[in-house]
Length: 302
Ligand code: PMP
Image (tube, rainbow, N blue to C red; front, side, top):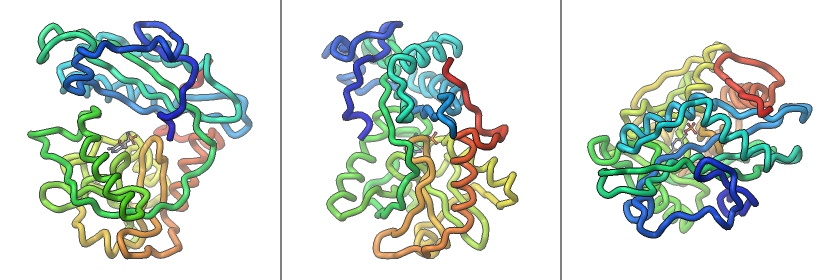
């Protein structure tokens, strides 16, 4: 698990500091109310290992800004400063053998109930194997995604992962690698750290964010790739029962990339996944810079 690594450096308080000195006070709202918003950003080496690039950096910055706005956390940093902060840490930690995953977290370090809030952008960066995700077996959790009027799924905040954590614990006990969560209407929302895509009758479908999933950057990329490949792609509510009859199923997210689902609950999915194989290969070729596509935006680390 990426976050169990202890890389030697962290970005905090506007500079790169040693891991051991990256500390937050016990009274910070970041701790006592879990008040922070974050992004997970992938750094890929290209196919010949000559350049490392951050995927969808601008899109992640924009979503972090929106999460901060929704959570009433001040975030004054502009994109250039954010970019340079990521670069500063990546330059210290990059190694050609492995890709990277950056967690950029905006913590509420001072303030109380939203008054006098002071935030700090903290970046941690972990090494990742350069391998494609293995097929996965998933269950359907009894834990649900909350309503938009309670805990909006489009805010990428740790609070939104509490039900997901319970779902993963539930899934581990049942022998599943991940769990799908339904929304209040019993329809598909998302998995614990990724979105869900299905294929029915030759068309890819995934729920829109109003069904209780994060506004996924990976899904936006996959939608654009699908369109270029001539694969139909729709965003529509997905009933629970459709999970039992889908022709193909996959999880998609920055860290997950695109992992094909082999089994959901007791149902084995067809071994052949022709549409998702094409989409996955295209995604992989683009992030490794073997091909280019306007929807796959890569920012090289200088
Ligand atoms: N849903 C959840 C709960 C997630 O944690 C993620 C990963 N960030 C996603 C969906 C996929 O979002 P993205 O493609 O932007 O990484």
